[in-house]
Length: 283
Image 1: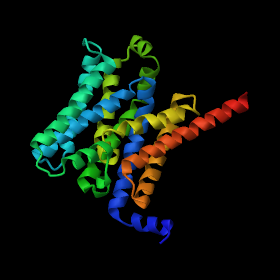
Image 2 (image 1 turned 135 degrees about the vertical axis):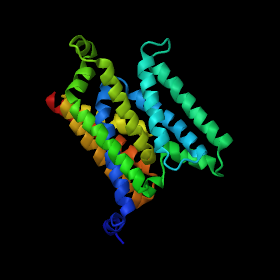
Image 3 (image 1 turned 120 degrees about the horizontal axis):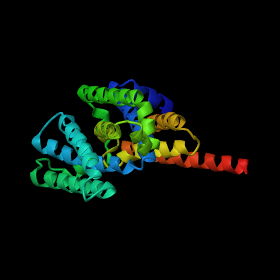
Image 4 (image 1 turned 180 degrees about the horizontal axis):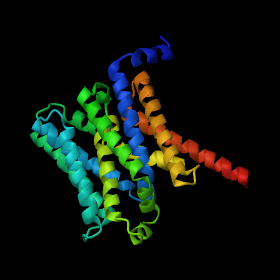
């Protein structure tokens, strides 16, 4: 059976279609928000919140909660709110606060799974949660529905708040002087990225998730000069890399998360080459 026939056969299975749907939705949401986070130099918040999501997953796993998203989502959103509320006023600010919360949640999650976990393969569970696994191909209808609802919420909020997000991204001081409630919009951005992290853990894992946020935005910035164009191109890159990565993973039997991230990294390298070619032609 050649790769094309093999791929057509795989696509006839509903669980593969569900996995591709979730992958596209997660990549779309992550890349949309990635442009804002990168430009505001807040891309590290995605990495920090993914560690918090791992800690929440550990609690849900030990408690035997089947629908772990019901635990992971609120805890990750609360962490995002605390980071923004406390990050500017506390003595420990910015990246230091994110780092402290991230490593604490990561260590606590691993400790909880080792001390209280009942599964025999704790190391395997931790590895698959941190780096992703083929569990994305076993998503339940509930998982797909939750992912779809959260993705619709994120995309809808981004579209409705686009002009305000644009203002807050480029000149926060001017936006505040113009009367915009900057704090509320920053909070909305943080909550949206928290939701993306929750639905993306099953796809690429907690440690690799920030790549879906950063790489498409950075790649788009190599060839685009306006916020709108960067956002649109980043979304296209993110979705394309997710699809190619998942299909390649299915055909080659490689880890899903790692394959998607490598596709994003290759796309970034390609757009860097395009930028250099343009500069050389212009010179």
